[in-house]
Image 1 (cartoon, one colour):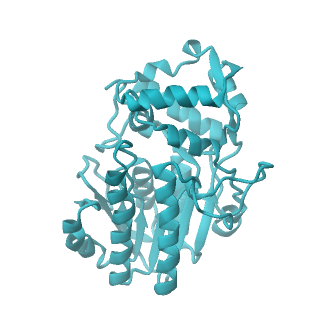
Image 2 (cartoon, rainbow, N blue to C red; image 1 turned 90 degrees about the horizontal axis):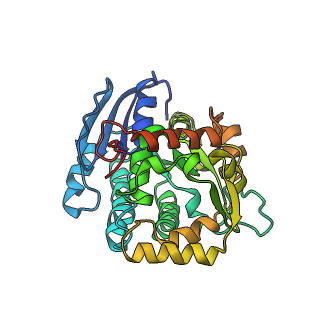
Image 3 (tube, rainbow, N blue to C red; image 1 turned 30 degrees about the horizontal axis):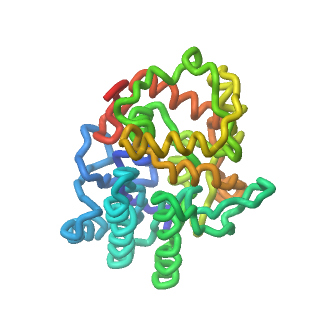
Length: 345
C-alpha cells in the first residue's frame, strides 16, 4: 500500500462499540480521504468524512450490495458481529461466520489491498497451566462450548485459507481483550446482563461482597485504544495477528478494589448453575457456556503490537472499567441503534 495516498476505507459494523470509535479516529487521520460505514440500520451520527450505507451480512440477497460498496475500497475493516440471540446459535452463525465469509469473498473479488479483521482473545485455546502470557503464535481453537469462541476460532481458519489464496491482500487480525467505553455501556449491559437489569445496581454501596472464582483473570482495553490499534494496522505495512490489551490483567482483587467489596470464595459450579438456570428461563442473555469460556481465556502478551505498530494504550484496564461503570449507571450511549443509551429497558 502506498501510504502517501489518501485512502477510501470501508468499515463493517461501524455503528457498534469499536466501529463508532474507529470512524471517529479515521475522521482525524489526514491519510484517510473517506469512510463508508456499513451497518444493518443507518445511524443518526453525522461526521465529516463518513457516509453510511445499510447492508445485512446474514442475507445472501445483500451480497450484490456488499460487492458494490467494496468495489472501490482501499481497505476494509471487518468489525460486524452479533452476540445475540444466544438461544439461537444458527442466527449468530449466519451473521458472524457466513457474513464474514461474504465480506472476505467481496474483498477478494474487488482485490482490496488491505483487510483488517476483528478477531478476539476468545479465538485462543485455553492458556498454559502456569498462567504465562501467550503470543500470537498460541493455538486459536477457541473454547468449543461457547458460540462466540467457536465462531471466532472458525474464522481464523477461514482467514488462513484466504491469505494462502489471495496473497495480494494484506491481512491483519486484531485480537483484543474485553473492550469497554462509556458510550457502549448500555449496549453491553443489555447484551450480557439483560435489558431489564437496572444499570444503577452497579454501585459499590450495593455490592459489599464479590464472588471469588477460580481461574477468573481477563484482560481489558478501552475501546478508543483498540480503535487506535486498528488505525495503525490500516496505515502500516504489517501482516498477521496482534494482541492488544491494557495492564493490569483484571482479577477478583482488581474488581474488589473497584467496587470496594470483599471477595467471598464461591464454587465455580454454584455460579455456573445459577447462571444456567437464569439463562434457560431467559432472565439473562449471557450463557453458561460463555462463563466457561471466560474462565479458560489465556493472558495475552502485547509486545508485538507495541513494537511493530508503535501502539500504546492511553488508559489502564481499570480506567476502561471505570468508564464502563460510569456509562452503565448513567445510561450512556451514542447516536446509533446498537449503542442507544438507557438506564433500564
